Amino acid sequence: MSKLDDLFPKTFVNVNGNITNAVDAKISIFDRGFLYGDSIYEVTLTEDRSIIFWEEHLDRLENSAHLIGLPLSLTREQITEEVKKTLVKANLERAYIRLVVTRGEGIISLDPNTSTQNNFVIITRPFPPNPSEWYQEGVKLCFVSVLRNDKRSVDPNAKSGNYLNNVLAINEAKQKGFFDALMVNKDGYVTEGTTFNIWLVKDGVVKTPSLESGLLKGITRTKLLKIIRENNIPFEECSLTPDDFHQADEVFMTASTKGIVPVNRVDEYHYNVENFKRVKELTTYYQGMVESLKNDQKYRY
Amino acid sequence: MSKLDDLFPKTFVNVNGNITNAVDAKISIFDRGFLYGDSIYEVTLTEDRSIIFWEEHLDRLENSAHLIGLPLSLTREQITEEVKKTLVKANLERAYIRLVVTRGEGIISLDPNTSTQNNFVIITRPFPPNPSEWYQEGVKLCFVSVLRNDKRSVDPNAKSGNYLNNVLAINEAKQKGFFDALMVNKDGYVTEGTTFNIWLVKDGVVKTPSLESGLLKGITRTKLLKIIRENNIPFEECSLTPDDFHQADEVFMTASTKGIVPVNRVDEYHYNVENFKRVKELTTYYQGMVESLKNDQKYRY
Image 1 (cartoon, rainbow over the protein chains, first blue to last red):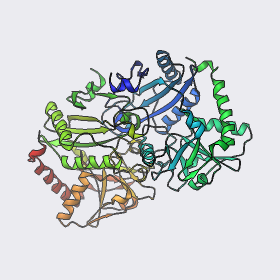
Image 2: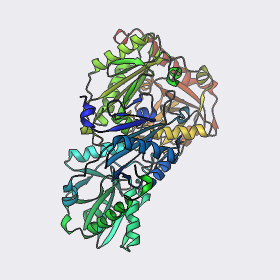
Image 3: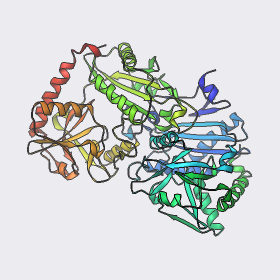
Image 4: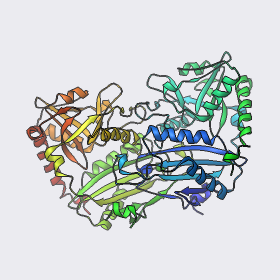
C-alpha cells in the first residue's frame, strides 16, 4: 500500500468528474492552484447522509470567486450534483467534504486571464467524531507573531488556496506546544484563528471580532449570530484585543468541521471550562439547528 | 492533441525524478502546494546550455525554505543533478527552468509538521527571446490598489506558492490596459512589481526600494547592485513613493527571465526611453556579466 492509501482509507476524489481513490487523484502541475495557490475552496461535513449548510457554503464559494475574480464554469446545481455523485460512491454516513476550484491551466503567467477553464476537485472521506476531550476539557490557543493577511493584500474573507499565512501561524503555535493559533491584524486587533472564528464571553455578553478586523465570515459564526439574535442573548461584534481574551470569563472557537469548541487557555491565561454557561447554552442551540438539517431532502445523498 | 500539448511543446517535467512530457506531469491533489500554496520556487533560464546564476537561485531557495520553515529533503547537488537531467532530456540551447518544492502530502491539516517528504517539480521548456519591443520601446506599468503582502504576514522575500496577492495585482493592471503592476506597502511606499524589482534614475542617481519596504531580493537586483558599486555609479537603496517614480528621468524593471526592461510609462506619466542613458549603461554591463557565465562549466548541461 502506498502512503496515501494508508492516510486516506475509504476516500474518494472527484477531479473534473472522474472519481478515483486517493492514490490516483492527481492534477496537472501546470494547474494555477498548484503554481500560485490561485484557487478557492470550501469544507463541510455530512450528518446522516445530509450535507450540512451546503447552501451557505455555495454562497461563500461564489463570494470567494467574486473576491478573487475567478469565473465559475459550473453552476451551483452542477457542483452539487458532482458532490453528491462522489458521496454516493464513497457511501459514507458521515463524511468530510472538501471542494477546491482552481483557475485551471494555461501558459505560465501570473495573468489570470491566460487560463479560463476551472479545475474542480472534490475530496470525500470518512469523518469520525472529533475527540470528545476537545468539547469536555477545551483546547489551548496562543497569539502568534504572524499577522493575519491585510484585507487590502489578500482578503481573509476569500477562502482561497493561499494559506501560507495560516500555516506559518499554526506552526508557531505548535512549536510553543499549543493546539492552534490566534492572529491579530496590523493594528493589534484580534481577527481569527488559522481555520476558525474566535469568541469570548464577559459578564454574560458574547463578543466576537467584527468583519472590519479582517477575517473569514465563518458559516458556523453566521449561524451562531442568528441563534444569539433569536434568543436575545447579549451580544457585541466589535474590535477586540488579546487582553480582552485574557480577561474573559469564557472563550470558544467555531468552525464548520468542529462546531463550538471551548478554549481552556489563551497564552498564559486559564479558564474553567466546566463553568462555561454561555458556551453550553449556545452549543445546545447549535446542535439543535444541525439536527434539524438532517431532514433536509435537498442535500441528502 | 490535448490543450497542454499545444501550450507546452518540447516541454519536459521532472516530478520527483520521473521525467515526462507536459500532459503527463501530475501531482497528487493532496500535495500541500496544491491545497495551501505551501511551496517555494525558483525560475531561471539557460544560455548556451549553461544555467544562469544557478548558485544564487539555490541560495535563495534555501532562504525561502528557511523563511517558511520547510526542510529540504534533497541537497543542492541532488537538486542540480535533477535539473541537469531534465535539461539534457529537453535538449534545449536556451531553456526556461521552474523549480517548485512543496512540503509534500500528509493528512489534511494546516500543521506543516504533518507532512515531511518534499515533492520536487522541475519544468524545462524552450525559452524564445523576449519581444524586442520591450527593450526598444519599453513597457507601461501602473500602481494598483492591491497592497503588497506585509512582511509580518507572508514575507515577500520568501518566493512561495502564495501568489494570489500578485495575481490580483496584475489582474487590476491588465484591466486598466497596462503591461504589469507596481505595488506599495501599507505605508504607501513602493515595494516591487508582481514578478520583478523596480528602479528609477533621477539626476543621474539610480534608486530602488530598500528591502525594509517588503520585497523579494531579486537576483538580477543583487547583480545590478554589484555592477553599480563596482562602477561607482551614484546610487541609493531607500524608501520611494509612487510620485518619486512619476517624477523620475528613467524607470526600469529587473527580473531573472527578462533582464533589464525600460519602462515608458507609470500611471499617466510618460518617459522617453530613447534618452535612457543609465539604463543603456547598466544593460551593457549586465549583458557582459551574463555573457561571462556561459563559460561556467559547473552549471553546463
